[in-house]
Each structure stands twice: as C-alpha cells, then as structure tokens.
Image (cartoon, rainbow, N blue to C red; front, side, top):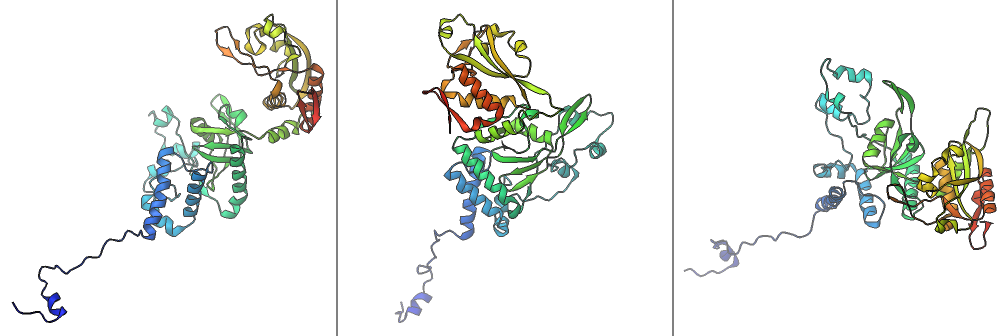
Length: 396
C-alpha cells in the first residue's frame, strides 16, 4: 500500500464513496408551499361545512380575508388553480361542448321560450318536462369600487346578527318574504336583493311573479338570476335575515294610515277580553288580547272556543280600529316587543291535545293599550316604552 501524502490523494482514492456527503433536505418550506398549505385550510373548511367561510367568528373571518386576498392576486390564483377543486377562486373553465354551455348557464340566459325551443324534441317527453331545471347562478365579480358600499353594509349585518339585533329565519312564502332591499343567506353566503325585477308572468292558467333580479353576494359577486330561481334556491338551502327592530318600525309607519282616494282599509287592530271559565285565566285582571285581522273581527272570532290563540274560549270585542296600508306581521312584531315583559305565559291544549303557547295576550290596563294603539297609528310609538312597574308609557 502506498503512503498517501496529500488530502487530494485521499479524496481521489475514495473508491467506495465514503467521503461523499449528501446535502440534508431542508425543513424550510418554500413560498409556494406555504401558499398552497394556506389555501388547503380554506378547502378543508369548505369540505367540512359545504360553504365558504363567513365573518361570523375570528377563525372564519381570517379564512374569509385570506380567500378574498387570494382572489385579487392573479399570480397566486394561477399557482393555486390545480388545488382549487371547489372553484373557490372563481376561475372559469373552458367550455368545450353545447352541454357545457347549457350546464354553465347559471344566470338563466338561455332559460327562455325562444332559446330553449331549439333544444326541444317534439313528441318526445324530455327531462325538462319531468323536472324543472335547477340553475345555480354563476356570479360576476364586481370591481372593488362598486362593491365597497355593499361590503360595509354586509359587515354591519354580520355585526347585527352577532348582537342579536337580526336573526336568521326559515324562508317560506315567496310573495311575502322575497323582497328587494332585504338580506338573505344562501348556501351559507349572505346576499342582498337590490332589485327583485318581479313582473307578472302567465304560466299556463296561472299568473305569478318572475323576472331578472339584481342580487349582490358578500364575496363581491353579482347575479341577475330569475326571481323564481332565487326563491327556489332559498327554499332548498337558504334563510331570511330579519330586519332590525328600528327598520321594522320605519317600514311599518312609512305608509300607515296615509289615506289616498284609491286606498282600501287593510284590516283592523282589535282588543279582546276572554270569557274563559278556567280559574287560572278568569282570575287574571287586565288580561287582553291585542291582534290584527284582515277580515272583520266578528268573523275572525267565530271559532274562538276551538282555537288555542283565543284560549279555547269565547271572547268579547273590547275595541277595534280600522287601519290603512298597515303590515300585519310588522304590527304584531311591534306589539309583542313593546309589551314583551307583560306577555301572558300559559300553555293551552287544543282539541287534539297538542300544547300551544298563545303570544298575543298581555296583562296591561285597557287605557294603556288605547294610548299605545293611538301612538302606533300616529307613528309616535317609536318614542315611547312601557314601564310595567309604574304602569305608564314613558318617553325614551
């Protein structure tokens, strides 16, 4: 064996590669890896909740803010495209066939008699005749400038929901509950119906509302889906966002009792007294029912002994007041809130034994009720509150 004299000789003679070193894999993530990982958190949220994150709590708000920022960054969107399995980045796919076009007609642009006729087979029962096509609106992104005022309002609505000033309610009764200027939640996303676009359309022997809406979503997108399409989507997976008490009052009194020559009376506010022989009811002093009827009160109470709302007993009409342009639901909401502290809390069993809790009976002196209704009809009620301890109406 020859003697090695230099380091070079040693390295050159390392035939088994003992001295070869391999660089260790770094645990430091690249910028792209961190980006993808942050987006996967949003994907995971969507898979778990079947909706985009909302500004309802700190965790969701962070995810929502991250998603909005990603959508605005074209370079990041390009990197994340392969991972965007739920189209959270609102990227558009290439349309390759007529079927793609029809399936992607989320705004219902092709949903007209003229355009659909070219795809209709005569003398053949098509799938569209067996079931109504369900369109999910494809939304167009709004510019930051156009969306800014809506975003402010969306944040305000979220805040009011958290504070209990607004509530989520079941969506039903399209004609009454799908109104422009109102907020709704569809598939977990808050939306604002700016214009309902409704117009009467003849469908066979029936006439119903329909037309293009202007619907703004909290993720900065806009849709002009049909009024009935939006209603159907809300029925399937949506909710109504209730108005605040202040908004309800403003709307209630906006046109109430402003009588024009073409106006018709919209109903009657009534005060009733129970004739119940039940000692638990009969012994309560100053117990009155305050309600609203769109038919004459005498007609409304004909079946009182069979209805839990009348405590399953006959009632006496104490007073009734004609009203004009007054919304029944909003009036009842106001009365229930105004006298909430003195609302009768009693359970009544109907004829089938089902337990029901009537909510329109209040323990309050008749003069106070008369004064309250007078303030309601004049619109002044918003300046007052009922002090149950002093039994007086006090200015706020």
